[in-house]
View: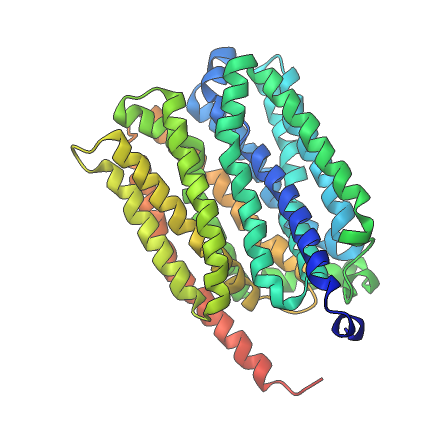
Length: 418
């Protein structure tokens, strides 16, 4: 701390490098999460399966990611974020890229499980690295850039992989993605000085026995505050997963436009979300009313998604609705992360973020599958209704998370100085 105060000028440069590297690799995670949906028509033609069957592949990915993320925080706290992140990026890349060599549909499932296991490391590893390697005064904006990187990965996937897949074949597109992912893993592995060589400073878990670790983790899992934060992430990702995985199919069927044209609306949703994230980062630093920012954003997003069902509206209006919803969701991102941070107990960064953000994967497991089933049943109109209702339901959860956060801060303020 003394060295930082004595020489403040190098700090911003190092902070920017850490934030930029973590944000870039996080974009890789989201690019791979959304690698298959832009090429669903090609996969349908190749394997002769339904949207619901393809959604099960996505659900397998998120089941592995969600389950792994709940526990991988222990590995992060014990061995460090950089090593865990490098190995996770490698497994994710091999899992998704390996699908290029599948000759039967069932082969996609074990590869999706491997990819999901690799993806499980990102949130606990990323937040552990950012929390320990970035100056506290920049942590809010660091979280915003982290989310921005993920959204850029989502936004690039529909255009990049759809173009590559339809132009050169879905197998070639996934092989190129494999090469890119492995290059990102190499960058992380070599960034020892920047991202850290071992566990985060102050991590007590490396001194704990396996039994003590298990007891501590069980205690975290029983905390109402963290379970409520888990529900917050699960609900929002359930809605977002439905939009990202089947938004194009929904608009294609409702407005009778071709699939690739409808994919552009999802790109608008994600691009606007990225802009909203950057603005939301500054808003989160400017106010303590993070629950208000998050609540208004979700309310606007729900109304915009529901509006695509208004009769007599053009496809252009639907694109505007998607962009509005994406922007509103993006604005909530930094406030969401800070709300979660407020309920987090000290000394367990990796475990806490791993547990809470496993809800993100659980939501993506459920949302796309339900949307795929609705489309197969001929009720495509219910997809935007489902998304809007989930966003409205989340408002009550946000209020509960904020209440726990206020209680947590009050308890810390009343505690005797250490």
